[in-house]
Amino acid sequence: MSFNINKDKIVDDMGFGGLFPLPVGTIENTYIGIIDPSQIDMNNISNDKLNKLLLDKSPDDNPVIVLYKMQ
Image (cartoon, rainbow, N blue to C red; front, side, top):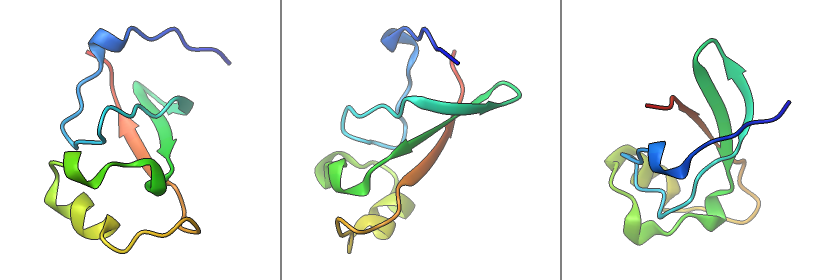
């Protein structure tokens, strides 16, 4: 499987700090990606629920699964 994605089409309303999860699969028109929590800059997170989830992150935590669509 391969993906050709234009970075200008990405909308980050969660505040992952410029990170973008490469797709590991799809469900209908939705892409599935994963981000390692230790790579997320806590200063850029704009979603309160994600911020609370990652407050006590550690390198051993499971990845964050991200579902997204392209514009």
